[in-house]
Image (cartoon, rainbow, N blue to C red; front, side):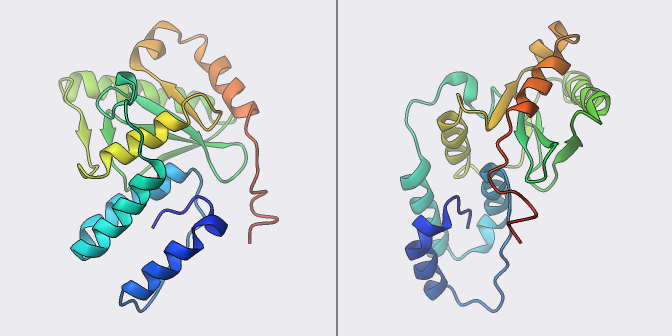
Length: 196
Protein backbone atom coordinates (compact mmCIF):
# COMPACT_ATOMS: atom_id res chain seq x y z
CA UNK A 1 0.00 0.00 0.00
CA UNK A 2 1.67 3.24 -1.06
CA UNK A 3 1.17 5.87 1.64
CA UNK A 4 2.28 9.47 1.17
CA UNK A 5 1.16 11.02 4.47
CA UNK A 6 0.67 8.29 7.10
CA UNK A 7 -0.86 10.63 9.69
CA UNK A 8 -3.74 11.43 7.31
CA UNK A 9 -4.17 7.88 6.04
CA UNK A 10 -4.04 5.89 9.29
CA UNK A 11 -7.76 5.07 9.31
CA UNK A 12 -7.55 3.36 5.91
CA UNK A 13 -4.32 1.56 6.87
CA UNK A 14 -5.91 0.14 10.03
CA UNK A 15 -9.04 -0.86 8.11
CA UNK A 16 -6.92 -2.64 5.51
CA UNK A 17 -4.86 -4.43 8.17
CA UNK A 18 -8.09 -5.72 9.70
CA UNK A 19 -9.29 -6.93 6.27
CA UNK A 20 -6.22 -8.90 5.20
CA UNK A 21 -5.13 -12.14 6.84
CA UNK A 22 -1.44 -11.30 7.22
CA UNK A 23 1.53 -12.83 9.00
CA UNK A 24 4.26 -10.29 8.31
CA UNK A 25 4.02 -6.63 7.39
CA UNK A 26 6.99 -4.85 5.84
CA UNK A 27 7.26 -1.09 6.05
CA UNK A 28 9.55 0.70 3.61
CA UNK A 29 10.53 4.32 3.69
CA UNK A 30 10.58 5.25 0.02
CA UNK A 31 11.03 8.47 -1.87
CA UNK A 32 9.50 9.38 -4.29
CA UNK A 33 5.91 8.28 -3.75
CA UNK A 34 5.76 7.06 -7.36
CA UNK A 35 8.16 4.31 -6.28
CA UNK A 36 5.49 3.18 -3.80
CA UNK A 37 2.98 3.02 -6.64
CA UNK A 38 5.44 0.92 -8.64
CA UNK A 39 5.85 -1.44 -5.66
CA UNK A 40 2.06 -1.69 -5.42
CA UNK A 41 2.04 -2.56 -9.13
CA UNK A 42 4.49 -5.41 -8.47
CA UNK A 43 2.18 -6.96 -5.85
CA UNK A 44 -1.15 -5.99 -7.40
CA UNK A 45 -2.15 -9.41 -8.70
CA UNK A 46 -1.12 -11.14 -5.45
CA UNK A 47 -3.95 -9.47 -3.53
CA UNK A 48 -7.40 -11.03 -3.40
CA UNK A 49 -9.69 -9.25 -5.89
CA UNK A 50 -11.79 -7.47 -3.25
CA UNK A 51 -8.71 -6.16 -1.41
CA UNK A 52 -7.08 -5.12 -4.68
CA UNK A 53 -10.19 -3.16 -5.67
CA UNK A 54 -10.48 -1.59 -2.22
CA UNK A 55 -6.87 -0.30 -2.37
CA UNK A 56 -7.19 0.85 -5.97
CA UNK A 57 -10.46 2.68 -5.25
CA UNK A 58 -8.83 4.39 -2.27
CA UNK A 59 -5.78 5.47 -4.27
CA UNK A 60 -7.92 6.64 -7.19
CA UNK A 61 -10.14 8.69 -4.88
CA UNK A 62 -7.05 10.26 -3.35
CA UNK A 63 -4.92 10.87 -6.46
CA UNK A 64 -6.91 10.27 -9.67
CA UNK A 65 -7.28 13.25 -11.95
CA UNK A 66 -9.22 13.67 -15.15
CA UNK A 67 -7.89 15.41 -18.25
CA UNK A 68 -4.30 14.24 -18.08
CA UNK A 69 -2.15 16.20 -20.55
CA UNK A 70 -1.26 14.06 -23.54
CA UNK A 71 2.47 14.56 -22.98
CA UNK A 72 2.18 13.00 -19.49
CA UNK A 73 0.59 9.75 -20.62
CA UNK A 74 2.71 6.70 -19.95
CA UNK A 75 3.02 6.16 -23.70
CA UNK A 76 4.32 9.69 -24.31
CA UNK A 77 6.84 10.03 -21.48
CA UNK A 78 10.47 9.20 -22.16
CA UNK A 79 12.33 9.84 -18.90
CA UNK A 80 11.23 10.96 -15.46
CA UNK A 81 13.93 11.99 -13.01
CA UNK A 82 13.21 12.21 -9.30
CA UNK A 83 15.08 12.95 -6.10
CA UNK A 84 16.07 9.90 -4.09
CA UNK A 85 15.59 9.55 -0.36
CA UNK A 86 19.36 9.85 0.04
CA UNK A 87 20.62 13.38 -0.59
CA UNK A 88 22.55 14.08 -3.79
CA UNK A 89 21.10 11.03 -5.50
CA UNK A 90 18.52 10.94 -8.28
CA UNK A 91 16.44 8.14 -9.75
CA UNK A 92 15.93 7.91 -13.49
CA UNK A 93 12.82 6.10 -14.70
CA UNK A 94 12.90 5.20 -18.37
CA UNK A 95 9.35 5.00 -19.66
CA UNK A 96 10.76 3.69 -22.94
CA UNK A 97 11.41 0.38 -21.22
CA UNK A 98 9.74 0.67 -17.82
CA UNK A 99 10.44 -2.14 -15.41
CA UNK A 100 8.92 -1.41 -12.02
CA UNK A 101 11.29 -3.86 -10.31
CA UNK A 102 14.45 -1.98 -11.24
CA UNK A 103 15.52 1.63 -11.20
CA UNK A 104 18.63 3.56 -12.09
CA UNK A 105 20.10 5.59 -9.24
CA UNK A 106 22.91 8.08 -9.75
CA UNK A 107 24.88 10.27 -7.40
CA UNK A 108 24.61 13.75 -8.76
CA UNK A 109 26.84 15.53 -9.71
CA UNK A 110 29.50 12.83 -9.09
CA UNK A 111 28.03 10.43 -11.68
CA UNK A 112 26.65 12.95 -14.15
CA UNK A 113 28.58 11.54 -17.12
CA UNK A 114 27.44 8.03 -16.26
CA UNK A 115 23.87 9.27 -16.05
CA UNK A 116 24.09 10.95 -19.46
CA UNK A 117 25.58 7.76 -20.88
CA UNK A 118 22.66 5.79 -19.41
CA UNK A 119 20.08 8.13 -20.95
CA UNK A 120 21.82 7.98 -24.32
CA UNK A 121 22.02 4.16 -24.27
CA UNK A 122 18.34 3.86 -23.26
CA UNK A 123 17.42 6.12 -26.18
CA UNK A 124 19.50 4.23 -28.73
CA UNK A 125 18.26 0.85 -27.46
CA UNK A 126 14.68 2.07 -27.81
CA UNK A 127 15.19 3.40 -31.32
CA UNK A 128 17.37 0.57 -32.66
CA UNK A 129 16.54 -2.65 -30.79
CA UNK A 130 12.92 -2.02 -29.79
CA UNK A 131 12.15 -0.31 -33.10
CA UNK A 132 10.23 2.43 -31.28
CA UNK A 133 7.99 0.01 -29.34
CA UNK A 134 7.66 0.80 -25.66
CA UNK A 135 7.94 -1.96 -23.09
CA UNK A 136 5.96 -1.26 -20.00
CA UNK A 137 5.36 -3.52 -16.97
CA UNK A 138 2.59 -1.40 -15.46
CA UNK A 139 -0.74 -3.13 -14.94
CA UNK A 140 -3.51 -1.42 -16.93
CA UNK A 141 -5.39 -0.56 -13.69
CA UNK A 142 -2.32 1.23 -12.31
CA UNK A 143 -1.51 3.33 -15.41
CA UNK A 144 -4.16 6.05 -14.73
CA UNK A 145 -2.91 6.35 -11.15
CA UNK A 146 0.69 6.90 -12.30
CA UNK A 147 -0.38 9.43 -14.93
CA UNK A 148 -2.55 11.31 -12.41
CA UNK A 149 0.19 11.45 -9.81
CA UNK A 150 2.77 12.72 -12.28
CA UNK A 151 0.29 15.24 -13.65
CA UNK A 152 -0.47 16.54 -10.17
CA UNK A 153 3.22 17.18 -9.49
CA UNK A 154 4.11 18.47 -12.93
CA UNK A 155 5.06 22.01 -11.91
CA UNK A 156 6.68 21.06 -8.62
CA UNK A 157 10.31 20.21 -8.07
CA UNK A 158 9.50 16.54 -7.39
CA UNK A 159 10.03 15.38 -10.96
CA UNK A 160 11.96 16.39 -14.04
CA UNK A 161 10.37 15.24 -17.29
CA UNK A 162 12.93 14.71 -20.01
CA UNK A 163 12.42 13.66 -23.62
CA UNK A 164 14.69 11.87 -26.09
CA UNK A 165 14.41 14.88 -28.36
CA UNK A 166 15.63 17.27 -25.65
CA UNK A 167 18.49 14.90 -24.89
CA UNK A 168 19.63 14.84 -28.52
CA UNK A 169 19.23 18.56 -29.14
CA UNK A 170 20.69 19.89 -25.88
CA UNK A 171 23.52 17.55 -24.94
CA UNK A 172 25.64 20.46 -23.74
CA UNK A 173 22.78 21.89 -21.63
CA UNK A 174 21.72 18.57 -20.09
CA UNK A 175 24.11 18.90 -17.15
CA UNK A 176 22.93 22.40 -16.27
CA UNK A 177 19.28 21.25 -16.35
CA UNK A 178 20.05 18.34 -14.03
CA UNK A 179 22.23 20.48 -11.75
CA UNK A 180 19.42 22.99 -11.38
CA UNK A 181 16.96 20.20 -10.57
CA UNK A 182 19.37 18.63 -8.08
CA UNK A 183 19.99 21.95 -6.29
CA UNK A 184 16.28 22.48 -5.71
CA UNK A 185 15.92 19.29 -3.67
CA UNK A 186 14.19 19.96 -0.39
CA UNK A 187 15.37 17.19 1.91
CA UNK A 188 12.23 17.17 4.04
CA UNK A 189 12.91 13.68 5.43
CA UNK A 190 16.45 14.45 6.68
CA UNK A 191 17.26 10.84 5.93
CA UNK A 192 18.82 9.00 7.74
CA UNK A 193 19.45 11.31 10.72
CA UNK A 194 15.79 11.87 11.68
CA UNK A 195 13.95 9.13 9.80
CA UNK A 196 15.28 6.00 11.45
